[in-house]
Length: 250
Image (cartoon, rainbow, N blue to C red; front, side, top):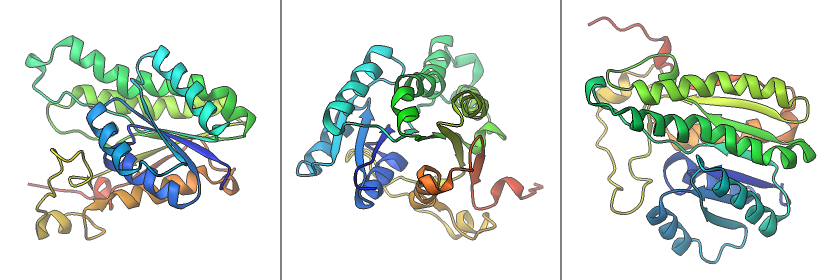
């Protein structure tokens, strides 16, 4: 995999950052497209000697930013073999206090952004018979109160995934992953990094016996982008420790 390049949106914090580190270790070139300038600057400082990594400022909802990021990624690494649409925001608040503009921004970043990034990477992905992995969520299928914007965006990602898989196949495979509770509280920019004090009850409510970790998602991404798994496309993989299958009566 030493000559392959993966693009990870929102890759300076959380699952995206752990994925970027893992793909570098696995021998890939890694392009992180990140909107949070502070997080990107911290990552650049820590990875300053890493020649197989490029951190690019990018708003995935802005076509000009994405087009520029594709060009810069190709200038640095010469190819794009995989795209992970991981960038996401939320606006969790009661419906009566949710401005329509905030709802639209969540949809623009989480859903439209995935479409734009895939559109501008399509030619490279087809040329290299590559793979797209979209980060969906178990919130596409179940909800807590006041999550309309985020849940709608992730429901859209689920449908967008199989639509893209049909449109781009057989050259490009497109799948999505729906994480459940994944603890990334310590994998954030320094002023927000605060390890969560998880209780035994938090772990026990999962049939798997524990809260998820970023590595649980990373290993599935690595499986999905590997060329040996060329018969896997248009699928959603729920990685939640079994929580969406557990009946709970209060």
